Length: 217
Image 1 (cartoon, rainbow, N blue to C red):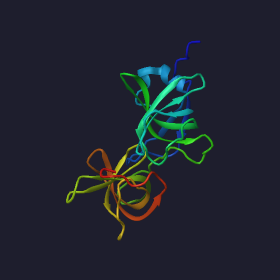
Image 2 (cartoon, rainbow, N blue to C red):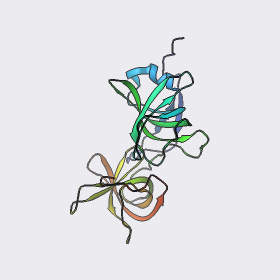
Image 3 (cartoon, one colour):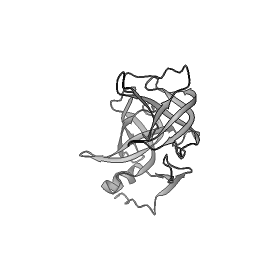
């Protein structure tokens, strides 16, 4: 049986209520699609944000990078690759994953942002609040170190890889690359791309995740 061609009209739009991390704000929409529909769409789907489900199998991942495939009910296989944020699926488990569709010489693949086991309904795609200068926001992100002493810059990177410069940490906090944190602080708007803005962090809570990594976070 020939696979049915994908279209936005036919797809179920999963609207994540909120705005992206830019001042004017835009809706964040993940399209819930089957693996078969993603593969059938080919290059037309490149750049789209999707959520898909299936059985996960590992290919060659490490603690910090996911490298595997999701297998659909018909046996269709979608490659999944990308940095680990705070979750690594177990082989042969039923999962839902979200990210951006990309393409290389081998075909379409999911640029992995994050995911969940099918019963973990409390987990969902992260939506960054608007970054408006002078406001207080709370961000969930990974700490990353850029540069080397004495020219070290710390940034916060969300699961979908939006970045915010850390202008100040709370007194006594020792940053470590790779920590997942919930950071509350005051926004300074503007930044040199890809950095969206800066934040002076007043409070930090360390969240579960893969843990600190070597230089570069």
